[in-house]
Length: 304
Image (cartoon, rainbow, N blue to C red; front, side, top):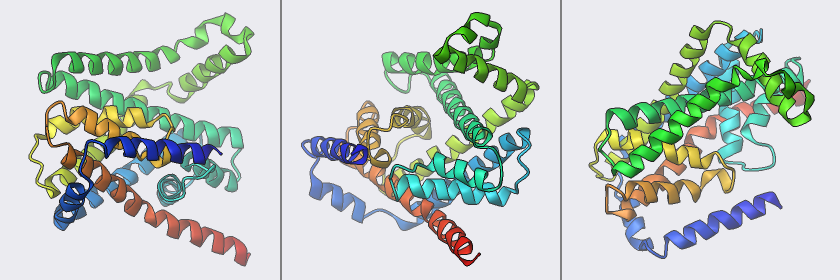
């Protein structure tokens, strides 16, 4: 039922977009895209996934999970495959948790490792958006840039405050608030050395930077000549909006957000939509190694 609702939301957003964008003009733009630039974008996206897997391993080592980098690379690609190609009740994060529990780690610890990886990844996205919006202030309208800076800065401050919630004793007395108290305790234990936290955040910044570069390469593939700084500012808010799982694999939400934001500086909404669609297809292609890793793992289990 949940996936049906997501499908309806995805279809509704695309229906709305095609009220303002000529479908045949969009197909013409897509058909003329340059393969070389798209291949470069694919390599950048694969690099982003690999770097994210490296971050996941670095975080998991703090939890004393003794798995190789290849394990996390395979797990990350499998998670991407389930998110992008098989949008089902089993999400990519759940797949990664199951991979860890299959190696004998406690379910709670595995969940915590994946959760922290997600949070640190989000903070890296906020840092990239904050720095880009400040350094290139004036690229977008003043009100938009100010809003993005406020949201990014608020998110980073909110994350920093998590580390102090364990000092508020009364939080332990309430079931829901106790969750934040325990989370603060775990974060402080995990990142007793804040230099390690900074390192992980900068790795996350690199993950998102590679993704922005991939989208920039896609834009070049359809002859959209926009400065790279525009994508540095515009793409992170798109990803922030996609965190809310309202559509199938982010389809529709991504397209609507990208058209809405980039039209502030670029008038050709058909090409903007083409960029988003090409990136969505790129995500599907880049996730296909996960299908091999998943099928190979299932086959090995059946042979035992």
